Length: 166
Image 1 (cartoon, rainbow, N blue to C red):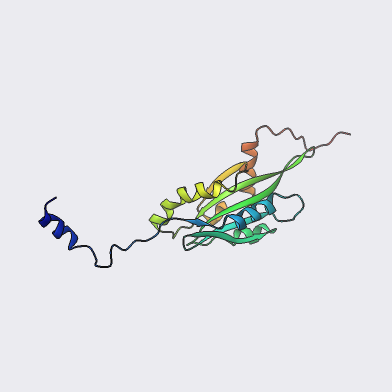
Image 2: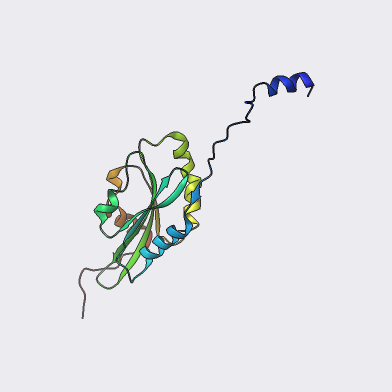
């Protein structure tokens, strides 16, 4: 490149250098792992954990036992991940199943919406055990019946008769 072209190009650069905006997502790994293990544990009553963004950092936003409290964690402008334990089974066998929820509120901007796919990969590196993964974008989808239906579909055959023979 000639000196003239280089000088012209350089004349458009701010004297303090280009302004960089960090798009990298940071994660509070230890806190998220602890909340994840709490939900998975049979010795605690914790049924869910929610992980939200504080700027470019994903943190534990809330944990709890009541599904209505879980539902209330997701707002129109929020980007979040939820990890939920739900008891499934029939009269012969009960078992805990886990869901990974990705929430993108309706008023989330295009760039942050697009970033969720790479941010989800970061979360899935920590939350490794789940039967179903759901992308949820409306409050109507935040329904325990909907979650159970998705878990039943993923679980294969359902042999329960509703009557236990002794």
